[in-house]
Figure 1: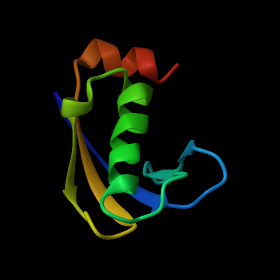
Figure 2: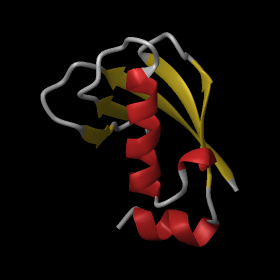
Figure 3: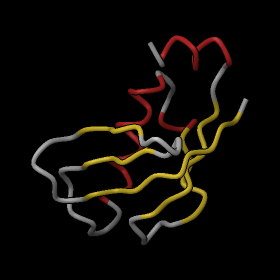
Length: 85
């Protein structure tokens, strides 16, 4: 099962965090600067931990060089419900 999320990234933050917005999108605060793809790599690692999937199951479909991204997560339906608790 593949799900898509609109993600707004805030690089150079003091702490890593993921905030769910009322519209279903995610706001992700990252410590890494947006240089040489470091923030994108940190985003993939952070989302993989949140959804309990491998890093290869996370893909950035659009917005590689933007703060607004469309992220695809390939997960099993049972995993998705367990990660939301």
